[in-house]
Length: 194
Image (tube, rainbow, N blue to C red; front, side):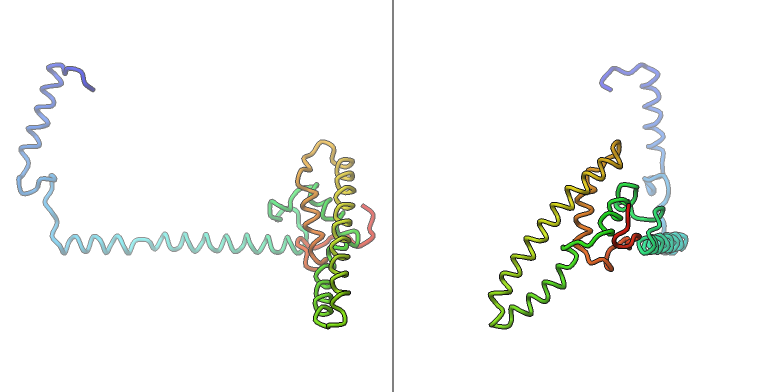
């Protein structure tokens, strides 16, 4: 970069400088500047060419819609191949089945909360509604702790060499949803043996 040039390199550099100087002074870029009408038609052609891009975008949107439809159907049917990554695998399936096979206190939280709120509007039941709130929260915490301990134990027995790191929290989040609103839909009946 900062070395001295050989005589051959100096001659070559002088030749390229001379070539640059022999260009037409009216066209310093090596070509004449296009007329305004030619430049505008060139820009219009460039704007009209993305018809192929539009068809590619449409095809990508259609593929995305089909993929989402497959995932929605898989969530409704429990099809393991098309489920989202968060719900795939034998550990997650066992966790879902374990949670769905029993009644959980947390799944009835929403209906109980509505009843307690309605009761708290009546002056005669306000004190009782506060006690019911406390009772519901304590029952949910106890049920969640028992579910977490038993689920962790069952996962360790059934999948000793697999990663069951977030399966317990996955199961506890599933218990908070009402059974008919759970996705993927429950595949086992209540009271079923796993």
